[in-house]
Length: 247
Image (tube, helix red, strand yellow):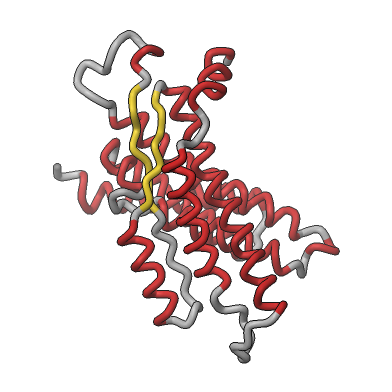
């Protein structure tokens, strides 16, 4: 634990290029979330400005929690992450926003490149970077967003917060961010886990999708956790019997 604390103090900080990339991702995804404020009128006024500002803050929280958890886990495994923006993904997300008039939120932000911290291990990996730790690092980001969405859902069960629009928006943003970033499209996070293990990816993504759906439907925490495990197991089993069994 002490070693991890030292690594965080020394290597956690974002570079100027990463800060620029994160700012671009947050601004574009925040614009996507706040583009349609749900009103018929398209007049830009104080309400629309507040809607856009709140969207930016909620997206910033989702993005920073996501990548920060990944950086901590990566440092524990002996890696330093470098965040890279995915311009094609952001362009596609914007196109979907304009076509749907902001009713569909696509979030294809970017991903990470892992660099080995050779001084913190006995040399390099013998055969290059191991896919398993990269898969784990990739998955903990979406998992962190699911946990954050579950936290906001628990808050929304408090009577005076049950109709809070910002909390509901934070839930949806974190759920969608988890689902989209765990897709098996490079350079998104899910691609790393798919390379580590197809079966593990099938289970984890199934469980993640199940959790996202059940959280959105406002089911209890226990049912959400159990349901996510069941859905993940069903998708894992289906994938195994359909594709992996004969390999």
